[in-house]
Picture: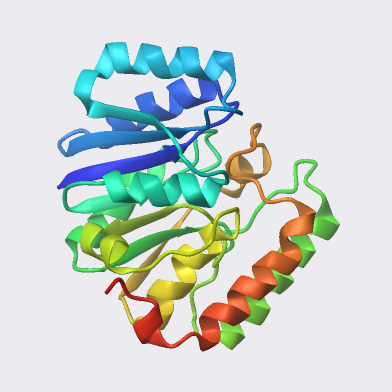
Length: 241
């Protein structure tokens, strides 16, 4: 498949380099392109050095740009607009989204699914210092919105998805900040796309080191707003016209 991987970046530095290296390794055999969205104001010098080194190494396989509007959601909307080929993969640049399951996600698209999404909940987990209260709240949030959306999918907020490109291009994305990751599950669910889940290692999620994919506690109300808004939004308003 022709695959575009989109990566928002701020302060990942060497983690971005490792992420891109692993993406090319795991998706050997596919025609791969990586779109990196940076922030002119916030992306660190170390990360910009990493981006320059990646461009030097991979050439036109890397499309790096500065987003024009603030927020990780805005960066990803611009990256989606630059995506080409058969599939678009949404990941983070800090190894929170483990590259080793990429082949499984792309395989789901090859099998006919419209979208594949990673889940952190189905195989069990180890705390490893992760805040147990926050973990419990996360789990309860998932259960509430699984009921609201009448879905068996187990992880609605994890920002690790693979889509057929026409799915990404046909949806009107709205959210400018971290709830965008939630939106990328809710609108495809409402529109009836076929979605498969792939198990992801929880340990990588709880040892993440950077900030582009990380929601803060103040985002909880925003996530609730996005969840309710998209549950009752008419489907015709979810599509690009």
